[in-house]
Length: 281
Image (cartoon, rainbow, N blue to C red):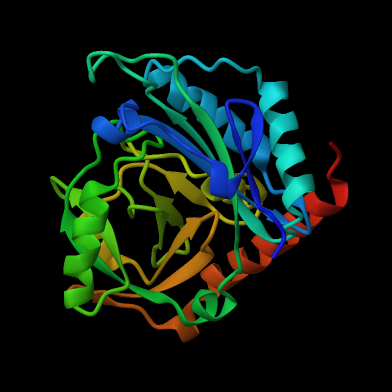
């Protein structure tokens, strides 16, 4: 098998030689941010948006970035060229650095990795079940590495026959641990929570591409809205648009009636294909 590479602080490094010291704040305190996008035929999909969010997360978490945006882009392109994994996921990770007292932010480490990624088109058609979980992420607008509750909650969700978790608190929906949630109401209006949640890149493009076709409201969404919805779907870089078949113990959705979800799935595929055709470095 050919050697695969990562980039650590600007240096191309073989995966089997990549290292991070145990005194980094990402390890001792879980303090780090990241972003993630996919490549299709070696083309980085919507990566400018991901870089916008990455730099914003770093700012919100007081993490200085030693490289410019263009330098990071060049590092990503080098990694794509060296690894030659046409269909992949690329993660950009910025840690709290090697802290002398184990608590104070130091000089952050920037790590860029690439992994194989295969789209799950079967799940995008068959859908998934969600389990309501009472929780709201701290720093909801930041893409941090803190997935402690997401991992714990997923274990509970699976015990109830669900595939993933949907967070709510004080009667308001927020998000899934790794996806945004959308509801289609009886009048065909689509609603999606906007209260202290991570603004997903797929969500961003859905709002943009459908604004002249489908009415979508980015606003607070309640449990009552969920009860009244006739369709539901989640969105993310890896899940694209995946329909929700049920909220375990609360609501069942008929996939055969998911006309709005299917319409948006088709729109997103065409939108992504157009992006690929028009892509320029």
